[in-house]
Image 1 (cartoon, helix red, strand yellow):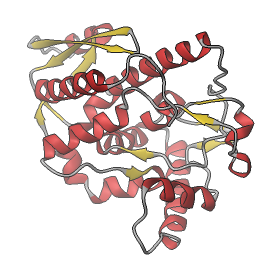
Image 2 (tube, one colour):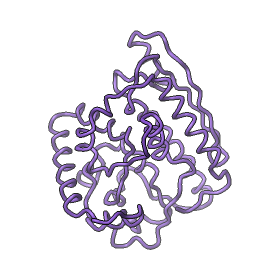
Image 3 (spheres, one colour):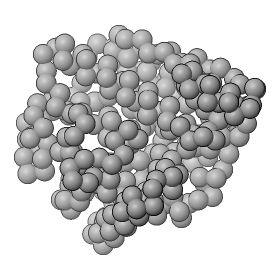
Image 4 (cartoon, rainbow, N blue to C red):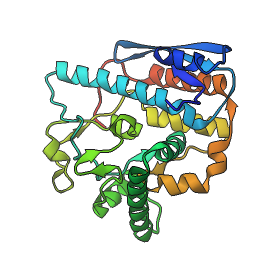
Length: 269
């Protein structure tokens, strides 16, 4: 968590209190995913917050949901190859919600200079290739994903087969799991893998949150384009709302999405 963030889970609450602000609002989150109950206690300072401030908790919730889905798949006798160190899907389109874009920008600035420079140069190189080959006509997401895969661009955060930001990787990466073999995920041999649809997508929830707060349409940014996009839209990243309002809206979106999701099966995407 960034040291000046006004939002934390209960396990991080001492970090909030140590910053000297005693006006803390406690917001409880409880929802059901595939018959399992997930609970969170979120503690929020009564001060302004930005879109980026909600992202650490969103990542944590995303990982919890994915863990539930993996457990259910394994109990059903299916194999889930997705794990740390597997980079088979790191050549596919990874959409970032607007809050995640600004969070990544902040995290890049906090990295060691050499690492940050390497990532920035990789992002800019990928961005140039994307923009030079961007389709003229608008594409459906599935077609856009196939077009992107055809570029064979490695994720700018991939180094020697390992993710440099695995702990802080996008929610879209966390939620992208398959059954079968990791070998089937490679671009030249996709047939045979089975993508799993998350009962609640945190990527979608974050996108909806930004749209509600900014009173705009739902947006997403391709991962390699995230850093230049964040720089161009810095004024949006600096915009603030009451931090409790940000959390309450996010919690309500999650509860609504969970209430509409299936509690019986994990459906293929």
